Structures are given as structure tokens and as C-alpha cells.
Length: 66
Image 1 (cartoon, one colour):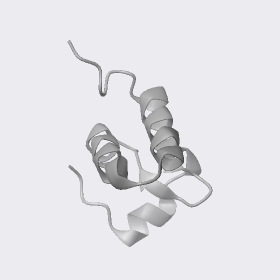
Image 2 (tube, helix red, strand yellow):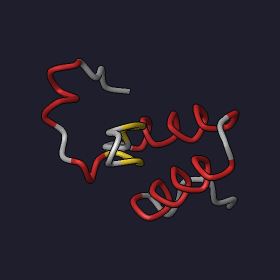
Image 3 (cartoon, one colour):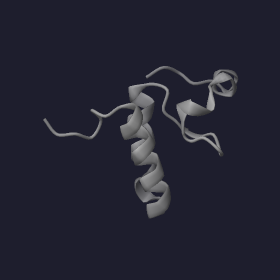
């Protein structure tokens, strides 16, 4: 996992976040996308659904069983 500094985070485009309006849950690489899924496990169902949808749009293979 690459280290995400505040300077780097500010430079990320909105499309690299699962919730772009709040710039929450960065998903610019697969490790951060997996981390976003883990972090929303105890959030509301609506937030979980948004993050899961964003992650699966960007990385369809995450969460799929082989």
C-alpha cells in the first residue's frame, strides 16, 4: 500500500474517491479500495452501498470469489 499524505490526497481527482462529494474513502489503487471496503463495514447501509458500488465499478475483481 502506498502512503497517502495530505498533500497527495489533495491532488487526487474526485473520481479517485468512493464518495466524491465528501472526498471520502480514497480508491485510487486496489489496496486503498480494499481498505475502503473494510472501513465501511460498520457504517450505515446507504454508505456501505455507495462505497461498494464505487469500488466494484473501478475494480470489478475485488470481492469476487474465484
